[in-house]
Image 1 (spheres, rainbow, N blue to C red):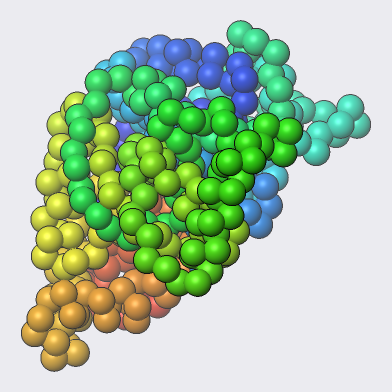
Image 2: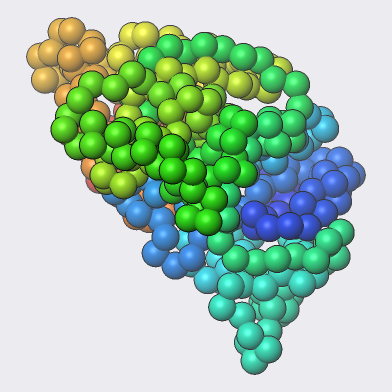
Amino acid sequence: MLTECGEARILLPLEQVEGGEAKIPVATSYARMMGAQVVLLHVLPPRALDSSAVLPEEARARTYLDTIAAQIHAAGESAATVVRSGLPARIIVDEAETIGARLIILGANVRSKLATLLTGSVADEVVRSATCPVLLVHPEARVQFGGLRTLRSFHADSARMGALTRRHLGVRTIEVARIVGSESRAQDFGPDFRRGEHRLDPLEDQRFTRVLVATRRGAALPPIVVFQLGFGYYVEDGHHRVAAARLNGQTEIDADVTEFVPVEREASALFVARSAFEQATGLADLGAARAESYPILQRTIERFGRDERLPELRHAARRWEGQVYRPLWAAIRARQLSAAFPGDRTADSVARVAELREQCGLDWEQALDAIAR
């Protein structure tokens, strides 16, 4: 698992903006000609990646890239995703060097949010600094920058991903920050799941107030109902409960989850591996993106259980998650280590560290440093 294949790679930076997807068919065509993997990159503002938690902006970016990756997979080509934080041009050039990209594909007029006529465009800076060829693609429409004004639409995102298989996962606890959209009401709400003041219905406002009061009193509310696409969740029922949870600073919420995955072998293998891991350990929110990560993580938990004399695997898993996994997860995110392995989630990077530790007899810190090097 630790050794990656020598596959050629094309770096495709993407922003969630109108007209920004004109580069995707171009990248797919070049990937087919070169036998290359397309690495989709989204650059968040500096310090927008929190090492201790996933924030909504990161969740939206990861969900968006997952839908594009599925679209490229459906076209018969390989794709992986990376989310990093920093100055766009610098991060693009750095990521290209890290993954050994043979080509960077950019929009001809892509500009960072702080760009001015004096600083020039991101594309200009990348062309001057990159050590590999850079292809500039003109967008099909005028690109508009700025924050997202609405939620992500399940129908739009699922249509982009192609044929999907529906799997009901049941009620589980999910991260509020990873709820990025709505099943059918995306245009009705802002990113906080509240309606704009100019469109606010008094009855809707009263309903929200009742839900907010109930949550602050600790009242038991039914689970929300969500659809999952890749990293993100889309609300089918429970928009007010999500809005109240965000307003209260709540990090988790109970949800009845139905997952939609592309109809392809890799997605099925991942689902089988994840289901077996969750059933054995009771840990349902690690979210690895590679099927091979789950057996490694389970072996690591079993070893932890033996060392700690915890014979019941689920008990050992809960202890391991708090004592080992979460601190390592934060350390990996602080170093943005997953950026060196396109397609990895943080859980996959934990599996890489765990495997190296097991193979070489290292402690966790030594294994983490070795992977970073």
